[in-house]
Length: 64
Image (tube, rainbow, N blue to C red):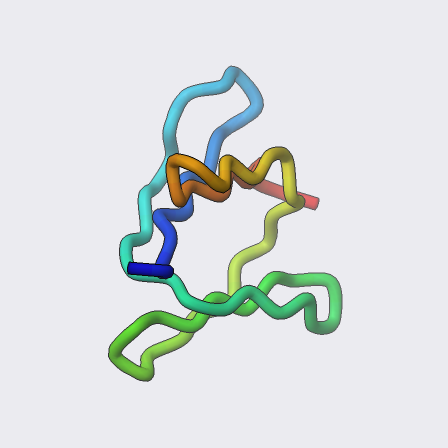
């Protein structure tokens, strides 16, 4: 499958939230809009930290 798990980290490196089945990430007005496999979406205030292609994982840092 080609969807990814998105992990959002806090300032201390701890996991704040994990979002499963993300297929698309779009930067929009200072946020990242995450679209999932089921047609849902949500905006998060975070910055891209790391993309792990082999693990299908995207790591974001909370806050901008």
